[in-house]
Length: 206
Image (tube, rainbow, N blue to C red; front, side, top):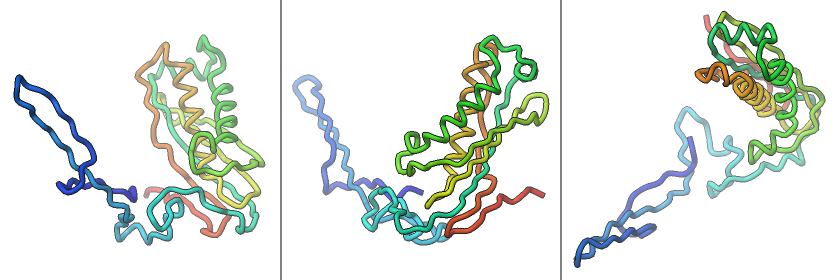
């Protein structure tokens, strides 16, 4: 949930649109006031847990200077769904632009290293390692998995997610000439380790 809500009131003019119709002036008014108190559902915890917002609800980059440097790891996954013929050509190296998976792997690694340029409030981190792997789930689905490691004051979850996203987009770019109906989805964090919040492991559906 976002910490800002927009409400309509007739006591605070924010925008006014006027137009002329013949000799009669018709005035259309939209009245908007911003409420800055963070909106927190009961299941979402307290305001203190939303660390990217200050007490006034304004966005901020979290100061991690006093946090200890620890080993951080994160693993994320995503999928690209395509026509069976497209996936077969990807596996066999039959796409005219070149080796799709090799280029996608490089794209994911490069993107992970520049996550702070993708996501506004992320810190710039010196990564220790980035691995990308691909697995064929069935005749139409290709899975992307990224594992990121760093010795740092903050986690690398976003780096792993960005790596998967960039690899998926690169696969689409390289194959779109033969299959514009490809679908990118199911991008999610699978696990993370290190840091004050402890470890996280996604539950495996039963």
